[in-house]
Image (tube, rainbow, N blue to C red):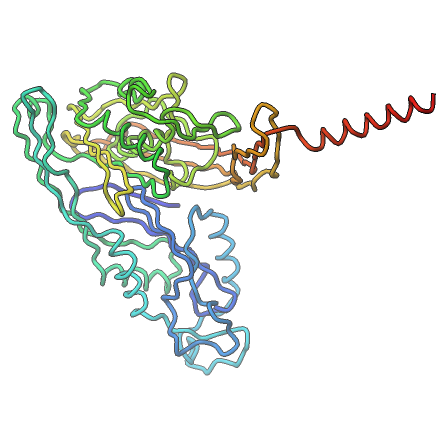
Length: 459
């Protein structure tokens, strides 16, 4: 079970440490996993050797065998399997067993001490840079034309408490705990509102931030993401109103600043105006989820797209057929601010300003991953209407899977709603369409022509 809780004062981000048992038993066959998540941010590191002392390495152990494999979308079945695998082995810490007796030599058992220094180095080098962030204050006002003006942006300060986190991980290894708390302290930003009308609407503080990463996007996709997000900057959602992404976005064509880029249409990926806008809808969806708003309409992509990890936290749109909608149930208006930023300016943010509902608690569990399926077979098709020798990739090789998110929203200890978001992602195969006639078809026609000629000669 993966749990994320959003509370004030001190925040506990959940880190999934998949340990079958203590690292002391048969480390040459051991592989562990750990996943870090914080406000839907996904972090993956491979082969990090942090828990075992280098000077205690078993002579028969191959290089890298003590490494931890950090991976995404870990299934509960994997955790159970690891627990069963290591349950049958005796656990030792040092040169003697629990009874003080010298351990018998066994080439299949390697004695390893947990190295706190390596845990601390890992926390400082990987978790701290990823989670730590400075607090940012924002001033909100209105211009003479009535448009909202943001000076800065609201961002919570986050500081990882390193020593406490190291102790948590160390204890988790000893006690075979699968989930490790990363202890952080939050500092709330100051939101200054210089407009009485906005104050009366309840725009007083930062409620939540939706965040996503579009690293690796083409310039066309980035153009559409940036332009699309700008349509929501300064947008006010009244209390009890239903926000419609498509309605606020408006027309998607050249006249509104969009360019053709790839979109998913059925079993193909083809260029259309606005390709990449699902990055924007997915980001606002995450903000709505975290702020405890009621999700009215949401669809996942037909296959798992890397831009929207962790899978299941996406919201695809295709106007007017598919929309993303949520209801503002905060009790006051919500004001949206959108911006690009983060690492190499490749992250998109939706800042929700308003008034946090009194004693509202949002608990999100997931994603739970199941029914993994391999990609489909590759294929090549031909289109005579396309130029001879041209090649267009219309689908990449993608595995299928199913994810589930659960969300419980309570207020003043009363349950508001329980949400269940199931996303089924199809398997896809690599598919390329080449211009010209299929060589196999030409060959068949040639064979048929030769056969007909032969029959004529015989007559």
